[in-house]
Image 1: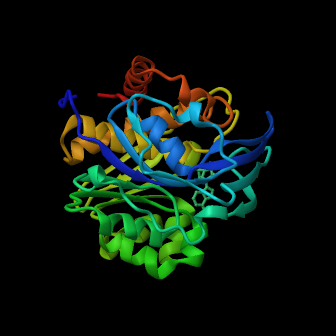
Image 2: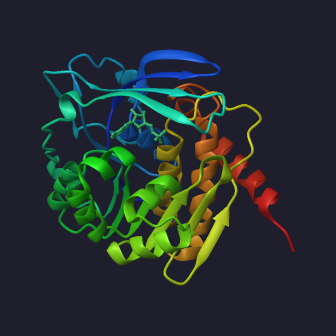
Length: 304
Ligand code: AMP
């Protein structure tokens, strides 16, 4: 890895109170949200300046308190924090959303602290696409824009999402969402369609089957890190984005080869996320542990 002092990543995403049920148990009103998972994960690799909003009912500040996470861009306001509920089936790859309560996210117009505006790398984690656009508009010179999204926004905010894509360099989404966005049942065709919409690089997450990373001329596929026991996969996608963008920022390069390694960091971070509920595992993870898992991942996928 190159840069010893990586520049901060500007990240926008939700901070949520999640209620999650998996075959391993149930947790209620625990910290979740794309912004929270992203910030905690990416902060192992580079500083993160988080843009988000919570209601006055949010009290878990200790969970987000990290030297590498700047929370000046997180607004606290009257109203309820975004809440999401999900239940996983016995086949843990299958999840049903039980509820999505936007709370303070509805009508949220982000204001960036002045110090954030010069940020060149931005992760538009999963949140309302008009909020993602507003963050982009607030930055002086966004050079490297990585966007994430989910089915909820593809259904409800497609026009704004297309504008986000026009202005993004990388899109991260799962295979179902890639098909939903393009109407293309074939994943290769879907990726090419997405590239025509803007992002030169598309990362398609396929749950326990790993990820596919597609540039305009390059292609790479990685398996998921094999875990014996998945306790709660919530946030794994956001942690993938965190490891991916965090590594690129730390390496100080945006070449396709860097992105290959970045995908391995993303997969390793996502695997830690699944080992416990909510942010519990990510919150106490060290960079040394992450690097060790990337190394064993390297041995796993290596062949001559
Ligand atoms: P993932 O498992 O990577 O899809 O991320 C799950 C996290 O995303 C949970 O912590 C939720 O609070 C959050 N989330 C769920 N629905 C949305 C949404 N529509 N927009 C933004 N974040 C969401």
